[in-house]
Image 1 (tube, one colour):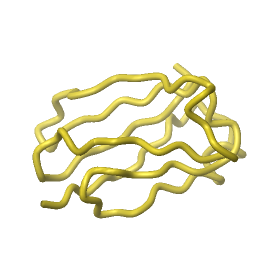
Image 2 (spheres, rainbow, N blue to C red; image 1 turned 90 degrees about the vertical axis):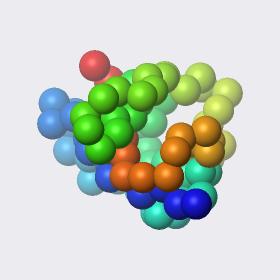
Image 3 (spheres, rainbow, N blue to C red; image 1 turned 60 degrees about the horizontal axis):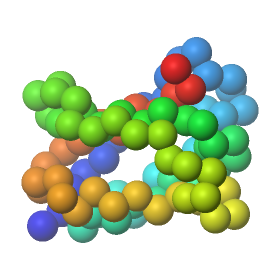
Image 4 (tube, one colour; image 1 turned 120 degrees about the vertical axis):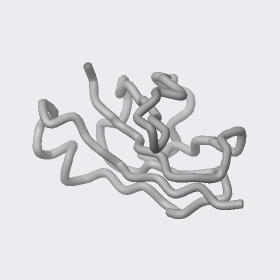
Amino acid sequence: VTTDFELVLNTNEPPALVDNVTLFPNPSSGIINLQGENLQRQNLRVFDASGKQVLQMTPSADAFNGGKIELNFAFLAAGNYTLVMGSG
């Protein structure tokens, strides 16, 4: 079972944030990593292929490890999802 993610960054974010974020592995079996600078306090929203929001979260500062955060989306059904990240 694989899940494919598309990372979309809020266009109101500073270019430094947009240019320095990586999502991997993609596709995933449920665990994905976001890596980059200034990820703290970023609001994450996940949308399914129909555009329905299936998750919203703001990871705690404790969740970050050296500029990387591991996210467990194994509970989502296999399919295509869009991960939207932004401070707003």
